[in-house]
Length: 419
Image (tube, rainbow, N blue to C red):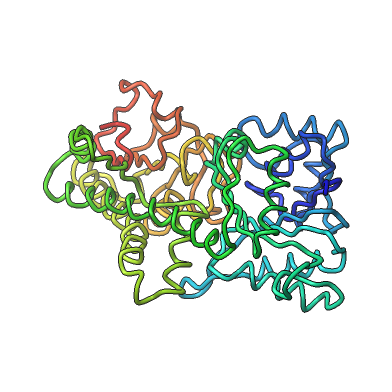
């Protein structure tokens, strides 16, 4: 059974590239988002996020009539849900966006449709999605009702790296978690429209746990590097030299430390496991706590640098300017979600009585969290005028800075750029 029209619910960092790739295969794609500005931007053939090569694909797809954005859900043959799944309160999963998406597509569902959840979700969310849809459409049969359902439902998480989404979306293997084997087969048929990687079929619950496992594994390994950086600071050891030496062992591959862990996935997904398995997920919880605490440690390093600056310069704290390099959660993107760099900058701005400057080449205006607290400046302004430099994100332009331009005596370098 072919797919004539695909609907993508949520046109953010995953939804829009996914919609664009399908549209590039000359499939009619209707993208849906509650953000009217995003919808208007896309319909002009432009993009509202930063992702290499995405602008070209979106422009061509819109120009050729294969991609259109709207704020209202329309009938389609397949619906891909790519909405946020943050946590609330004490790190409890917030599935309200998924539930809202289910409510929006339910009225237009018809027999033969496929519904895929791509949002990172706790185990059991796909089944909950099916229950919401069944409650809204008692006239249709869903996979939980037994054989021969009218609607196929699957969980198929993305596995892409921001900055390389347009390549990895196509090349990476895809975990296809159907509620039944037939649902998995139907979802695989959809992704094979553009996928060069393998469709690896499994059950929805296993696919949900697989996504959480992948990011929890990375989080634990980053926590080891971050904890090592704390220990090395106490011991007077250069952590980057240490890691480089340790990684010469053929079976050791320690990651690089930083100001914490950011992004919607690694900083959030482990908490979904902890929330459902609080007694068993002890290592995963500890890793999250280590990484979440790193921005506070960075702030302590900045406070120490300020104290030394005041003693040496004779200035008052209100006369000292601190420049933070980078706000994104990883290099060379504009994504600020769950960014530890943003947290550090905000902590500094809230605490410091003098000027707090931020240098972020991938944004044009100061984020709301820093409005009235910090000032967006250029790299040149920061290097020439700031008293203290704080390296938070190793964007390529920052790594290209000539060492001769860095004359400050007080530097807090969380990425080893100026070591």
